[in-house]
Image (cartoon, rainbow, N blue to C red; front, side, top):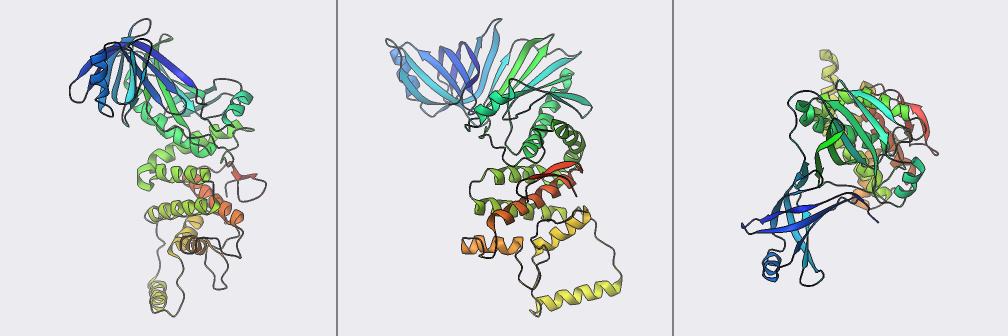
Length: 416
């Protein structure tokens, strides 16, 4: 069952898109399944009828609540349900729209000095605290409870707020810090093998919370069966990964769409069926390699070598020689450029003897609906995943310990 990690109450005005407004007490419950439910209580029957007529219409909430009083706003929400309460009272339930966010503001931010930002993370399971220096600031990651207790809760599949990140910064840095935390959580998700989300962001001044933002975002089930970094036994490896990869990620994020590349990897791991998992990995690899071809410098060749290269292409075009898969050619170049050994046992060179390779397996799955008979589905799927992960780690500049998922049981190796 999803649990509540924040609750708020107060009184305010709900204004619908058509301008109709109702003044009523409200309560807000933020749950670990990503639902943020806003409830208002309407006593007057005619008012209740008017509200009910606006079912599924967008609205906004402005009000006050808490001690000391704070401004509470939800920028965009939608009425989706109503239940009768005691007497003539009606309870109306709202959910935030896609871009809706809950803001609680106790006092204005100071213009100077320092504040403390705290981010609550969903599904990030740490045995001990770690500290990383990113973009010139220290990020302190602290578990919010007992590791074994959280592990047992997460094993049921329900998301949970498990870790809090604390950063000291200036008020003017808060906006850029929010973007930085989104990049950090994506890198953490890739490293941990499960999707990690930001549940809340608090701003503290002199140890007092003066502002909070809670977004209506995706919280996915916990899944850590294929991590990239050994967080459980060696959490220090995660610190090295974050500090070593963050600047590379910032530099190459837009050019190579590394955000998309990392999300693909996390999605592939959460897929239940091996055929879906393999196809997602192949699409991710193909997408990344397409962008890499403009990033990897081309080798300078003499006119004789260029002539024979063009002659070979013409020969292939005329059908005299079976063409190689473009994806596998690009993969081989990328592995060579980043000095990565291909331990997968699946040929990247598409040899003429018909040995299985990623491109052929992809074609069998897409057009035939199943793996080839001479291929071990588990082996080739996790071999492809390992190749993709090592390539991502090399692009991110990480050459330390990682978990090799191409072997059973998984083994800790150096990226090479």
